[in-house]
Length: 439
Ligand SMILES: *C1O[C@H](CO)[C@@H](O)[C@H](O)[C@@H]1NC(C)=O
Ligand SMILES: *[C@@H]1O[C@H](CO)[C@@H](O)[C@H](O)[C@H]1NC(C)=O
Ligand SMILES: *[C@@H]1O[C@H](CO)[C@@H](O)[C@H](O)[C@H]1NC(C)=O
Ligand SMILES: *[C@@H]1O[C@H](CO)[C@@H](O)[C@H](O)[C@H]1NC(C)=O
Ligand SMILES: *[C@@H]1O[C@H](CO)[C@@H](O)[C@H](O)[C@H]1NC(C)=O
Ligand SMILES: *[C@@H]1O[C@H](CO)[C@@H](O)[C@H](O)[C@H]1NC(C)=O
Image (cartoon, rainbow, N blue to C red; front, side):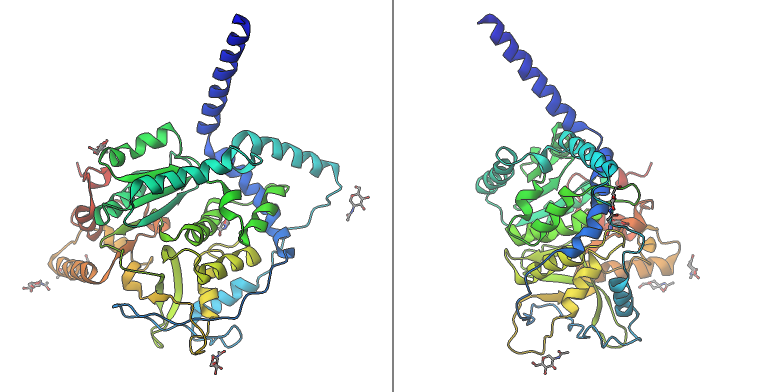
């Protein structure tokens, strides 16, 4: 009796030990593993059979905002004057090149596969645990969060990266979100923030009564009943070969689409500052650039997405992702993907009503990534100060959010008096982010 109790206690503490180990295992290792899996996937996914897409429908529902016309080039009729679109086609048609199909019967591959499987089981309880525990846990946690939170609107962010790399600037996106939407809820889907350390990072928000839930993704559950399900099955079954880089971005591209498709709401990248409430926007995607001659959008972006649950456009995005995924090309599965899909929609066809709007760049992408640098610098003289003032007035009037293009801007210091500094001062809650300190 005594002994069995002691054994049980020992088992309990062992379990706790394993769980805490798994939780705080360096995410870089997990990232590396999944990435390697991805490489296998990138050549096997092309053999996926997918159901044909239903007939294309679309009509633009007007908001108070100026709506850009759809870029109505069919895939063959792209004019060479539109460099963005031609670039799109080039990207789309490049083949996988060096990735070779492996000889499955090779014992080396088999061994690799077994080793990988074992390591995934160790590092990722979420993706591998068969059914039972993890699935209902994700689902029930989200359900109970939503049912107890009375959310005015629902936000999603994803962080499929290490907890160490979640810094002040990422946290600031959350600050700006709650500044404009204090009664909303945020579901932060993350493989690294759903543990004690993550809870601590978010504690300033929860202490203020702001509703944020960090939750580990159960990909099998999230992707279920979409075309991403098969894609993910293949990813999981995949072998891995050494080489190539980050899965995070690719997976995050898919995750945002499926989360909105399943739950509906507002998706935000972690390098966005919200400057105005988004709550009255429905089913919108933002253009990041506009053709200077035709005034039609030339590229859409996915850093901010606002869609109802089960929206047919999201389904098309997901289908396109599953069908054309290419882990070797930057942007192919994100901004280029949505541009491809929306570009194929014929809005003049009157029978169509997908019901979504394309907002002009001023809505979410008021500054191009090539010019973001200027937003971080303090004005050097009077005429720059004048320009900066005008720009700010314009932003406050016409923009809902500012995408900061983290890839370009994360190393930039935020100078006092710069546009970004002033926007951050407007949108902060704690106003003590280290980015706002200038000693
Ligand atoms: C998936 O990974 C990236 C591209 O950014 C490649 O460099 C990786 O190269 C991969 N793709 C993405 C993110 O689309
Ligand atoms: C795979 O490897 C085995 C043994 O190494 C060989 O007999 C077989 O022909 C190979 N198959 C292919 C498709 O290369
Ligand atoms: C900012 O303030 C919050 C809430 O008062 C606090 O929890 C957090 O540690 C502070 N952060 C910094 C960087 O000082
Ligand atoms: C779009 O639809 C209209 C009306 O159905 C049709 O006349 C037109 O040819 C279509 N355009 C393209 C590019 O498919
Ligand atoms: C202000 O500074 C910019 C760049 O530093 C310079 O190009 C511009 O001529 C200056 N304007 C005036 C009025 O000094
Ligand atoms: C800046 O704006 C002020 C007031 O609007 C104006 O008087 C001044 O001439 C402007 N300075 C420059 C260098 O444009």
